[in-house]
Length: 77
Image (tube, rainbow, N blue to C red; front, side, top):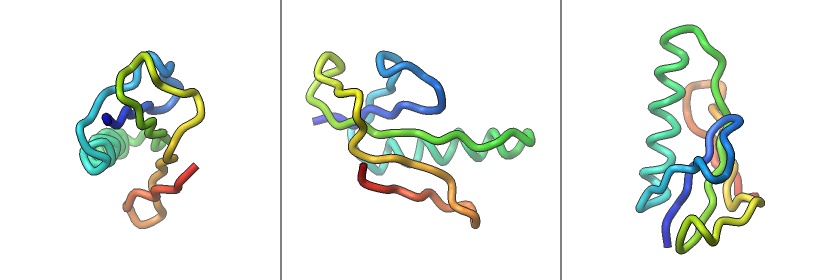
């Protein structure tokens, strides 16, 4: 299994593969920290679990958002 991270308005085909859920969350956090540094609004994201990119389902397994104190909120979809 792999964890595919889809951020903002990216297409599902643009989702980035990560080997663990923690890696995907860390990548999401890092991107949003960069956006915050330049005064941009944080993105929301989704994690899709699949064996390959061809097996990705449109409906996500997890939804990610930045919390009010800088943490990442992870909600099962």
